[in-house]
Image (cartoon, rainbow, N blue to C red):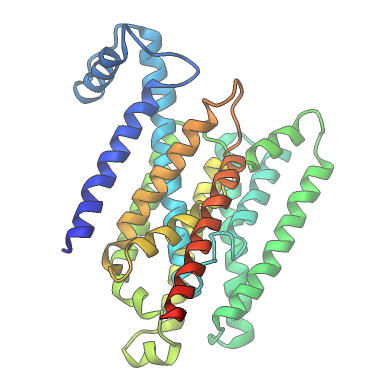
Length: 346
């Protein structure tokens, strides 16, 4: 393994662990016991050895509020980053994000329907999950029917934009007919993204989906890299491009829908994190998936820390990801432009 990759794989988990410990301690409810060093020690021992904290309120905040929320941020961020990485590989476009085939808007429409039907949290999440899969299923079905299994990347993108527009119209209709004093607020806040309702049931559900997706992806790592070639070249090397592309789209949609169903629509994570990892790991595609997951997990955890600490009330995640993600992405594009000009001058 190259030294650069080994260094990244060593440093990134350490940074993530330090961020997790800081996230456990800091928040609107101060957990400082006597000083910051003692607090770190108490929290670390409580997590490792299951030693109760001196303050029962601290223990409730730690194990029932912050710990599941932190795990949810890690899983959602990693899932969105992986989904974005897969979509960008499948569509051979670094500007593609997880909502390209309508998965995000479909899941958002399902969540809005759940709120209108007065379903409980689990029922709303199931509805969101179903509609997210339905949106992508429509894209794949129409593409297969119209093009007899030979639909190109551009066909899927155009169909995705169409389904995305229909699902967004459904969201707008849901807001229009919703009770403005109750349901409208719930729909709006849910679609803007939040981890405030995270619990261990959601963590376990998303973890199982992430593990299942990783197991399916593991055997396709080499084949995914061949998608950068033309379809004819990839098929010459023994890859069934149509089946592989469909399978990868289903996995990415599964990750996206599961995330939207639990946390709402969170933009930019699946766009900028894979883009940054690909530039950082240029030429080392074997390790891109694991580093993409770590990068997405760290990014969303930092965003969530800001969301619950910078103001007296919690800021929706989609606002912060847009505010921070847009400048980062512009910086990446600016760097690409400068690099291309330098290469032209040579």
